[in-house]
Image 1 (cartoon, rainbow, N blue to C red):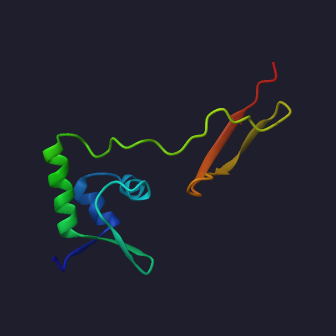
Image 2 (cartoon, rainbow, N blue to C red):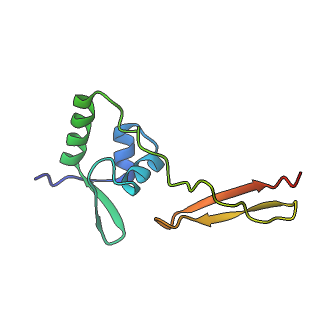
Length: 106
């Protein structure tokens, strides 16, 4: 077992990926294994190496992960013809989703 641990920022730098991408992978259960100590998310260096080797051997990019939950067929909010701006909360995971709706009453 390695005594070397990395932060999300260090993992993103090592994988040459945006920090937000590494956070998203963690959110959807993809990407390298992670754990928390208090509020800090850490990754073991050995797990990062295994993640890279797995991606190399499978011959595909780990970034091919499904998009966040989107409910289709929901009625749009009533805006009486005005533009609505705000945010929604995902019923599955509680993440905030920005909302920008332009109602068409024509």
